[in-house]
Image (cartoon, rainbow, N blue to C red):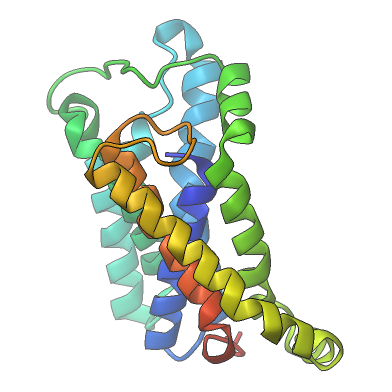
Length: 234
């Protein structure tokens, strides 16, 4: 799955978590960071530092062991200090592994219990990986959606000023833009479920289309609901 898809999933899940714990913005940031952390660590490690040993970007932080350790630390800190930040980061890591369908690669997901890592079909050199990210249409759509959702997490005073000046215009585009993104997400999900190629994407597996469509739909929903998803607490 592509980087911005992971990031969008982390932000949408983080918004839901933040609303459950009193609207803390650090929870959203932690979940978003956790959602992209496996790629931030494993891709440079696997494609550059350990390239001679297989060149695979889903290794240590893509494992169930790493997820269990992150969840355990998060639960301990939540129980001891009532801080949900690390736990939110662990939830982000979990979302990353779900979107990457790591259970389909049991040897890597259950490392080290089934032996060393095994490179999969996703192996590629760093340049091709970067170009694939930039050429993926859904990434640009998610990028635009994330820019709008990011307004929710601006400094409160700055955001208030922004809405005073541009509020009417933002309100006019919020519903149609969010609705269009949700519609596109539905087409992606339908395309994956029916194994069709209704829109051009770099996602080859039907399951990836479904998952990316669900994330895109979540981003669209966040835009539609922007007026009630504002997070003011630190």
